[in-house]
Image (tube, rainbow, N blue to C red; front, top):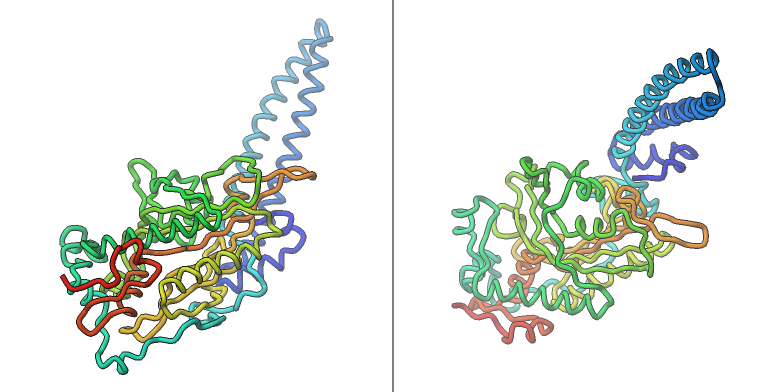
Length: 420
């Protein structure tokens, strides 16, 4: 959540952030009213409590009729204190609910607009000209069948649409990608983590995934648990209600991820680009606010290093304001070239969430001036299915075999994936 002090001192800044995100700026004014009501309710309650404390001391030294009268007043005052406390609690809850509806304050450097208004920051590598190799590229579904690596038909039979099996070299390719990602992250100073994928509502809400992203979250109603769509959620909540030290703290979480993909009917239904369950290695950082922008660039560079090692052409985009999640002030995506689609597709992203998540999750650090919220950042090191798509399509040969990127060969033990 945002800092209420910023809202009170510069509400127009918050209204404009809401506008450029395509969200409702009127919530700012509703929150201001609710916040004033909350603060007045606290003043009223504390005044009555102070009066009650004074009266309690007077009762102790009074006698006879005076004491009886004071006790009667104390009884009446106790009822008023209880009522004031209830009003205070209700006012605080109302203000908190409005506060949860306001997204993080957007970075002024982020492009303004919708999904299509991103800015391309750079292109890395040149898309392969398959005509020079004398053949038309096959898509990853066809290659997956040839290699006996991907089985979407049995996936659909067992689990419905947007489901799949990775088999044989497909499964081995996942293990290779994960092992390379974790070993790279460990060398870069990240602590590897295998987090839970079932989390309590506080963890999901604290990371901002029960707002605009709620429609894509799987909720187990009977138990009131959520399946995570990214290990960002359990990694962010790892230090919930704690005061941390030795910043920055860097974690690399490997987990399965679950997404309903609501609202994407008809999009990317072929293959394994947009699926309900996939595995991913996610980087997560806790740091001081003043270090967050530099840390964001480091996360982006680690993502670029990974794509460079996979020898895949890609571009980096600065995501526009209307396409950001509620927690992020700025986000960079790396998009890999997919030959059979003739376009770039997102394979990694990294977001700077400043103090937004840590305020919700109550994660702080201590300095000479007391405790402060930490900044949080996240970045995908590798989302397995999309990386497999990019590798298969970009490194394929005419006979359906696929050259293994040099960085993965020690993990796979082969130079080429050959038709089964």
